[in-house]
Length: 424
Image 1 (cartoon, rainbow, N blue to C red):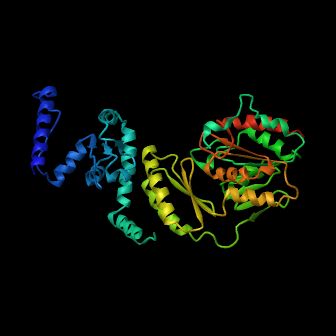
Image 2 (image 1 turned 60 degrees about the vertical axis):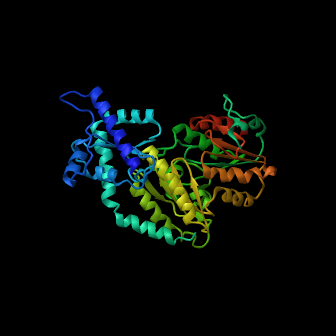
Image 3 (image 1 turned 180 degrees about the horizontal axis):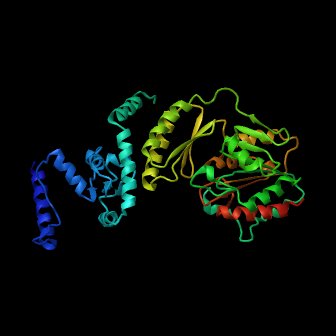
């Protein structure tokens, strides 16, 4: 009780000091209320304020921030500055995150909040209100009860693509039989905000047509995309190479003109529980969505509020790993995606199976990819010294590859030099 009295006295002293320095007979910068107010009065105060500041250094759910959001009207809604140490931080997608220990940054966030445009305020507040109206306390309780019954190379060491677009080892490819595994998104084509919008560049199509007709190289596209999407991208462009969808779960043979399922039996019993979890996170995260690929499910959050989505993605990743412990699946975190897939829907497993099915062992194997799923290819091939593997990572990230291409837009230069090195 003594501590509370001391704190109250300190607050009142600060309020008096601020009002004395910045106030005037017509205006007081700090309206200090030290008594309870009725619900109608509180709601009116919430609506009157442009910004709610919650600076707790340790907090539970913090219902004040939720009450504030629900009280806002559409004409000119307020904004929420919310401590990252408050439980509501994982609930309000467009709350501006603050660290109350960092006074300078918090002051800057306050200034930024006051300069938010009206359209942005309306969009963000509407999104949070819609979520709170749909995600009730009963929903929260069900999730908690369900959880209670659940059973428990460093980049500096690898070689970058030279300015001339040609690795030294490419000088020794002429006349050799080459097997080339290549990813699509982020490798052959730039990543798009919406997966359906990914398109191959015209120059990339030209190069791939040349590769598909090269007698010295068997080119295989290995993608996490579903069969339908790969058909749209490749079967209408006069390509003559095999396709592997859903990380190798399905393969397309241009000779037989049909798809084959490489995974036998029912390996998707886990999908129902995964979709239940992802539905909750999709509801909580604006602009996020789920993509069902058959033997894999992907949660996309590229277009969501960055800080909030990254925070929830971390929680989701660990929640899925714990919930799916012992299941025949893998949980992967990629570029603004969380993916759950069958252990057999694995690019490394696919590469092994494909090499074993070759009538004649290739002289050289090349693997090119940008994501964590491509690391499965790289890791498998590193142990196959008999195949002279050359694994190339697109992007500057931790990898099992020994080579990397800094940016996706340099892949075409690499492919052009690869073709000239291989010859006809």
